[in-house]
Length: 121
Image (cartoon, rainbow, N blue to C red; front, side, top):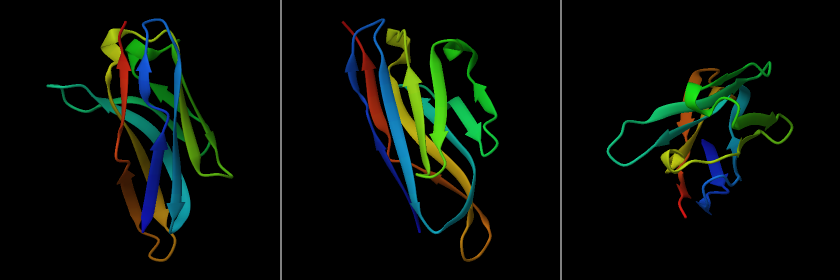
């Protein structure tokens, strides 16, 4: 079993900052990619940012220059630092991990439970 524990969501004013974290634990042989997706009401889930085990990053165009993804490989934790937040960033943010299972060596994909980020005055 692999578990993801997210934290750090909340209410922030436009222009403010927030950091969300996601810690992975369990039967992990190797984490390949960690990332964040988001889903606003009435919209489909969309990619926000990802980071690979070689620290290659990818961002949604609308968050480039405002959001920064990073990871602590020793803690199997991924962070998303969100600056200059806008009301349109309001969504449930989901952590995503793609890894190799410790016992079966199969590829697996795990989602977090989601953390709500609300940008409003």
